[in-house]
Image 1 (cartoon, rainbow, N blue to C red):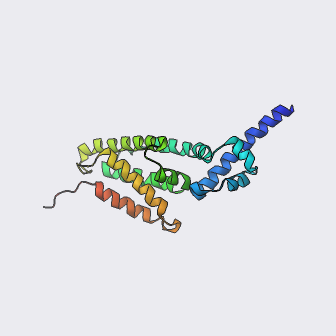
Image 2 (cartoon, one colour):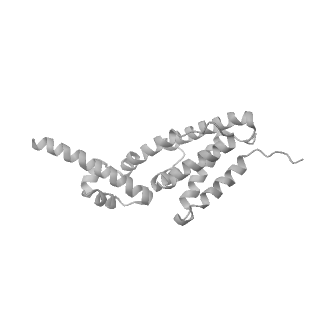
Image 3 (spheres, rainbow, N blue to C red):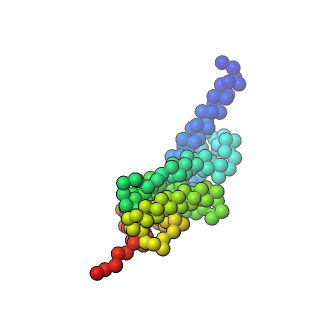
Length: 190
């Protein structure tokens, strides 16, 4: 085997180790993770890490881009009322996100002009439109709720997850209930 080919395999292997280490470290520590900790976890020098990913943002985008794609493919379950489908979507998606501090940090701290946040808002608004279309039949979502309201409520839940202490994860269900009560159609009392 030539030295050039061996060197290429080392480059590919180093990149894979960096991505694996960054995935672990960023999921656990979030956006505040130290780049040296990622390099150490990968078993490479900090210079090697920066040769592959010249900025923190490029590394974070490499890692969170896959998770954002998964979020963008999530949808409402078919056989539930609009409000119960939103409950399932919020609960399932927030549970998945809760184990990924970097994605929580990214979504909770993104600027309104950020491309990733814009794509996420578009998808969440699509989910909201689906819920509102379903609610035209089952009348479980309040009439004044918009798809953007639903998307923003989801992002508000992401922010709540970000600020909750790790040992208070049970509070997430309570906050989802609070959000859904605000979105739910109130039937008049007799």
